[in-house]
Length: 429
Image (cartoon, rainbow, N blue to C red; front, side, top):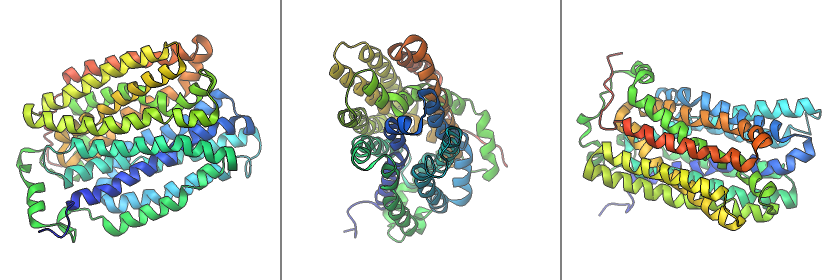
């Protein structure tokens, strides 16, 4: 009998799950703390939208560089370096505004700069996670671990809502940025001690598990050298996945940036009540992300990657668009929260399909390819964060947020043209 009941790949991935969880604790807290930061620091909704967008600018612009960084240095070193910056920039978010920079322009400028670098630091995690999944998991078993990573991020965001609300009500909004620093230091230390870049190099890896991981890889994209990742920018299916991920993330960023604010200002909930209600979409998303990943892997095994990825993606996007629209126009605030939770859960149902399809296409270039795809996904946040309060000022929050339904249906239509069954064939580089 093996020394461990849990395969080594899942034990390694459990650390990535915790880092994904931590990532959203450390980035989502400002969207809750913002309700206290705006009046105390004299920041308007429009200005806060640009502060929120600064993180997304750094995050989006560094997706591809983050994926290349991960492929060049390897997942172990790349994530460890990023972790140091995670911890520093999170602490600076709580310390600099109002303490070091006290004027209105200084406060806004320092927050924009710091949140930009928070985004830069967090950018490599999901391209690197996708590369670890490609390298450590058997062919065709990629959707579930990637979806479990999405479960980690949604649980982190879910906990951030009530935890940050509680902390800032009793100890102030600055404390909500400091409480996660010790946890971050501990998790990145564990990652550095336990992770290896190659499964064969891990002390706990058995020959049977390694053979399972390495089976059937001859059918995948060949490794033609480090420089071949540049060709992915022109790959048809990578570009289509990027556009479709932009559409899906338009809804994701509605929840990430403005959902807490919407519950307080439009539906009339208190800060503490909103802290718990705002966690419901993320909790529902945590469940449906893993369900969607399992569904995708099962369908890929039975129908192949073309339909196996396409069916859950289209189903989830159509459901998300419908639930968003009827939830925004619901008569009861509690009914609205329930329907909007189902909307977000539907977006998370698609996550495994996106990342698995990109892995089928890119093979050993999954890190930079996922960086390209996630760039598109996070460009949506750059648009949504400042655009929503602008639209709300002209047509109201309900009408502004309902534009996400259109993007969901556009994303579903794009999936009709995505070919996950057609691996990228690089030229020698």
